[in-house]
Structures are given as structure tokens and as C-alpha cells.
Image (cartoon, rainbow, N blue to C red):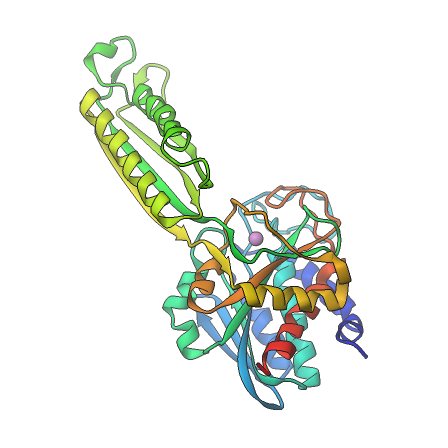
Length: 384
Ligand code: NI
């Protein structure tokens, strides 16, 4: 029997696990039930389990039947603060929380790969199963790294994947080299002088200043970033004011910068600071800007990207494709890939609603494929 045949024999179990996780989504660093189920299922397969790595992260270690290299496989476990609107029988039972990015599927696929590898035990080296918390901007990968993930569980290579409703079912893609953007998040606090709205001359209007600053920030990408360097600057929040007749004293702007080149991102930070300083001086207000890096640029090792496509090709043939498009979205597996070389692929499915949408539907048909690709990476790369 092929890997896929073997995994298909328990495809119904995978669907049941995925739908159970979907019904009970948990936000980042709160994946207590989810990580409990992961640990229990791994132990049931005879896999050595360590919990509490990066708060709610779980690592399973399984040795093959002959010596070899250590191959890490990673899945994310967290859900999003979204109110589900699919009306599916297995829709979220937790109001305001939903697996709208399909991390329930990634977790399930990795459990499937672990079960297959444990049942067969016919591979060289060691499989390291990394179940990561808090991928959605909360720094789960960094939390695991800070807890000594790769010092305690050394890996020679690591692999991850993401479902994609944007590609045809069964299409597997990997982009060698830089693939997904690095991300900075910023906050800008403006302190002016509050006053009666009927007497603006007695205060300093933070709202006028905030909206002016939003416009000025747009000039950075348009006029300072070379057009050949992909970079996005989006202001995503403005908070100020609470009354019709009060000019607010404080305003808070927030947003994100997505980049592929660290030096360009640093230049953008400096331009933002310069514009803040100019407005500060011109209007006589105080402006504090904080910029923090959240995700690194996701870079796939070129050779290992080929290896991952090679594995996928065994299952989907020509639907496994090397891709060339850069994605401006971010993914915190990037931070693990800065520590250990590896690759990250996408798997297309028949869901037609975008990720992070309240109507997102995951196609359970891709669970065995994801599990098979992950397991195959261990079989192919463990021997070196
Ligand atoms: Ni995701």
C-alpha cells in the first residue's frame, strides 16, 4: 500500500478530528483543549510528548527504525477572533472565535502524518512534530524558539504547509527563496490639546493631525520606496474622540508594514519617524511612534523547496508546482525557517471563501494529502 492508501484508511478519523477542533476553536496562547487533544493523540501512537513549549505548544518526537537525520514538521493550532457564519453542523460553538484560517486542518494533517509514521515506523532518523500556538500575529513561533525549541529538539530541516482556497483543489505550490513578506506592526500616539468643539482655537486638534499624518504616510511607499521593492504600508486603525462637542486630546493610529527587504523596511521606519517629527514641530503636539517586528520574511531553501515539490508530485503529479509569486501576507513559520532551513507549501482546496472570512469553509478532502506530504518529507529527507 502507498502512503496515501494507508492514510486514506483513516481519512474519516481525520475528518472527525478536524471538525471537533473546528467546533471548539481557541485563540492564540489559549489552545488548552486543542493542545490537550494533540498530546493525547500523539501519546496514543507511542510518541514521546513534551507540552508547554511556548506556553501552549506541543512537541512530539518519534524515532525511525534506523539512524538518520531529524526532520521537523510544524502545524499551527490557533483560531481567529471572528464570529462564524457558515451554519455548518460543526460550526464554532464559541461565539466570536472561529477557525477561519484552517489551522484546525493543519493540526489534523500533522496528527495524520504522526499516526502513519508511528504505525509503520519504516523511516531513517527522527520525526519531530511541532504543534505551534498563536500564529495569528501573537508570536507563537518566537515563543517556542525562546523556550529552546531547536536546542531541545534539534532539527536538520523543517517543513510546514497552509491550506489555500485561492488555488485549484490538489494544487501544491512552493516558492523557492523569499516567499512571504516580513511584517512590522506600528502604533502612533498623538497628544494634542482637548477643547470645546465650538472653540477650536483654544486647543490643538488631534483628529486633523491624525488624518494629515495618514495622508503623509502614503507618500512613503509612493515616493521613497523603489518600485522594484515590494512593500505595503497600511494604516488600519484610528481611535479618537467620544463626543459631538469635544475636540479630543488624544488620537491613536495603528497599522502594518509588509516587506521583503529589511533595509527598505528600516528606511520606511525612519521616514515615518521623520514625518511624525515634522508634524510634531509644525503643530506643537507630542507624537510617540512604536514599531515592532512581528514576522520575519519567509524564505524557503531552494533545494528543500524542490524536495517538497518532489514529494507532492508523488501524490498530485503536475499539480505540484514551483511558484514565482511573492505573497504580501505573512506567516510566523518564517521565524522557525530563520533558525533551521526548510520549506513551506500551500495546498489548494475547493473552498471558495477567502481565509479570515466568517464564511470560510475548509475542504476536508485535502486532509490525507497534507498528512501524506508531511510524512513523506520524513521518509525522503530522514535518510539524508
Ligand atoms: Ni493561517
